[in-house]
Image (cartoon, rainbow, N blue to C red; front, side, top):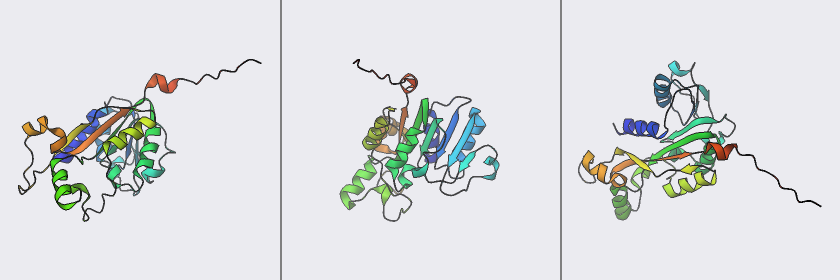
Length: 219
């Protein structure tokens, strides 16, 4: 399914390794954390969500915090910080993103996925009806469109190095009763045919560990 592809693509962008500290922001029931636990031998797993609906089998392995993403700045730093299909649900997405960026350890990575607003379907609906497909009035959980250039700018302001975006999840072809774009077309035009955009950013280990040197002028 498209969500499975998005999750796999986000994990690949995180460059997973054994014995890392992971933080999943907007973890929900914990499906992503379970995949990390069962595959990558993490040193620590953290999850946050405003509501505690973490699955019971994860309770002993995940340090869960029932807190909104906008108030996550108090958590320990992590080697991998994930916001998979989460930022569009937030009331203050840019504050949350700055908090998340601040939790990336030296040498760590942040990966974010969110609805891709550049698809052909979005463009067609915006031109004909003046609205974004992923943010229709009846899609109440989606609050905040996240434009990639704004996301990239904020991550850069938080001293992360942003990589070129990638895309995942086959979008529906407009006016076809639910047909999705074939893989051959998606490989050629991923930005136009994929429902999710994935942004990855890293914190340079050496730059983060440098200590500023104060130079005092002599009298």
